[in-house]
Structures are given as structure tokens and as C-alpha cells.
Image (cartoon, rainbow, N blue to C red):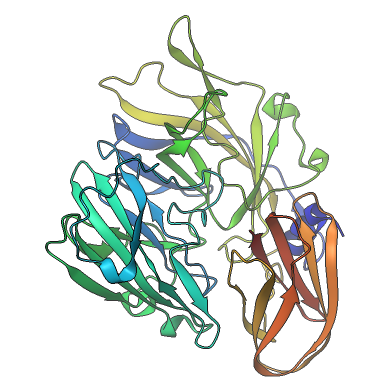
Length: 435
């Protein structure tokens, strides 16, 4: 089965036929504040659900979902911050030494614009311990922005299938080695286990919640780093990112009223910047933003979202021509094109309490960790590449309890894959990055 079919049928058609009903277009706005100083979290039915400063955080740390989400992001483009992260040629044992001269000649690291789990710290901040399923930091990083210069050591992440057992240990100091501190953070205890990220402010040494719960937002209008116009480098872009519980398909060139979901061949649930800043272009003669009137998006709520199975169509109809001294609001038109039945669209996985891949990203082999409530016969494990091609398939009998299935991925090319586990009564999918 092609990936696009897995995504569409797995997330939408579990219980049978969708309720085909197209609503009228509804206008709405996403506010980014005077000079793009705010983030707007947006729900496609309810509108803007949260509006927060985009410069009050430095690190975004995984809080929910897969216990082996361990890639930390940085706030490089929040208003006025100009943040830069450097991987220093220093082992963990050097934490607390004066490192003010160590960034010379180094290239800053950026978040990957396409992926929520493509944070600037990458997958090289530590090593994986298979015995206790922890990531142990072995490298010191420097993070420098308008508020200060810091050294950061992610000392340990304890990963478990049970969210209550997960813990981060993070050490922070000024770049010259002064004012050291160690912070032990248990996302579940702090109330972050239902949020995709929690956030850390290095100047205040505080960690906090700033985003809605997972499944309660679909779009984020924000300022982030991305490529633009074929130019070399990463630029600060004001754009719209899709949330981690939706998939999206862009339809162009076709006016929105003529676009039909039935013509969409596949939805992408991994790339967050398909909208990005692509709904607008800069006119280099007038230096004003112009909208693309033949572009719209179908957005589908996936398992884990409060409205799993529903599909909306969205297009953008307003962006300020000039932003100096302007309270920026991005205008969009929304209509629901499918509403899932009230029951059965999202089956609860009564057989599996958790399913994670570790390490992830991985090379050579990857551990598929399953916590099964009861034995499952003839489960099918399928690896699918981003083109929808099946690259490997296994048939396994899964015993009840916690177990580790090792998959050989040594022959796979680097890139993104989907691991689909399916048997009678359940199906689950996780993203795998092969490095």
C-alpha cells in the first residue's frame, strides 16, 4: 500500500464512509502583532486559540508523544533575538569552563524548517544507552542571542514508554563558565505531557508551557528560519506551519472553489512548512506582498487530534502590503469539506499501550519498542519511504508486555521513512529518520 493511501485510509476511513458535507467559507485571521512579535496558534474550527510572544523562549524541548523524541530546537528568529547555536569542540566534562573563545570559526546550527523534530541540536548531542533507554549528553553547545551568551549541556534524557517516567537533565551556564545550574525536568509532573514541546528561557532559567495541548491546534503563524526565493542561506520568514496532528496537501494552480479533495492524491503529515511563506510573494517593483490566488490547501486531522478524520480547505486572502508600524494579521478563508462520523473514526488502541522507535534518527538498526496489553498474532510491520514504496516488511507475533524488536536498516538510504504496525484490531504509525 502506498504511503498516501495509508495516511488517508488509516486516519480517515477506519470506520467506513465519511460524511460528505461542504460548509460555506468562513473568514478568520491569525495575529502576529506589531512587527511580527507574536505567535498565533490556530484551530480550524475555533479560530485563534492562543497568542503569545515569540521571543520569550530559547529552547523547545519535546514534551509529549513518542518517548524517544529527543531533538531540541532553538529560537533563532524570534523578534529581536538573533539566536545562534554552536556545537563546541568540548566534551561534557568541560562544562563550566570559560568557552568565550570557542565559537570562533564555527558555523551556526539551524532548526530544519521542514520537521517539528528537526531541532538545531540534532541527534548528535549524546549517545543512546540501550540498557536503560536513555540518551546521555557528551557535547557542550553555545547559544548566543541578544539576551546573553550561554553554554548548554543536555546531560541526560531518560526515555520510557510511560510518560510519567521521562526526565530531562539540562545544565546551563554563562559562556564564560559562571552562574552554572542543573535543571531536572519531568514533563509529566510539570503538566507538559499533553504538549508537543515545553520551553526554556536561558536568561531567566525558567521552563514553562506556552502552546495549546496536542490536538487542540492545527496551524501556527510564526517567525522561523527557512530558505526563500532560491537564495542561499536561511532567512527569518513570517509564515504558517502545520501542527503535528494534521496532514496537508497543496493544490495549485487552481482557484480554491474549483479544487476538490477527490483530486488530491496524497497528504503529507511530516513536512510542516508546506504552507510556510509560500502563500505570498514579494513584488520587487513595488516591494509589497502579493497573495497567490490559485493556491489552496486541504488539511486533515489525524489520530491524536480532537477532530480526527475531519478535513478542511484553506486559502489565504490577506497579508499586509507593508508591515512597518502595522499590527500584522494574516487573513484566511476556511471551509470544512468532510466531517468524520461522531463515533468510530479514531479507534483506541486497546491492544498496544505504546509503540516507539529508538534511537531515532538511527543507522544500522533500530529498536521497535512495544508495550502490548495482550498477545497479538501475525502483526505486520511495514517500512515505507517518502515516495510510498514499501522497502521492508516483517510478520511478527507480539507477546504481551514490554518487548524490543530489532529491525535491520543497514541497507536503507538516508532519509525519512514511515513504520506502520498493523494487525486485526489496531494500526499505528511512527516516523523514522535513517542517517
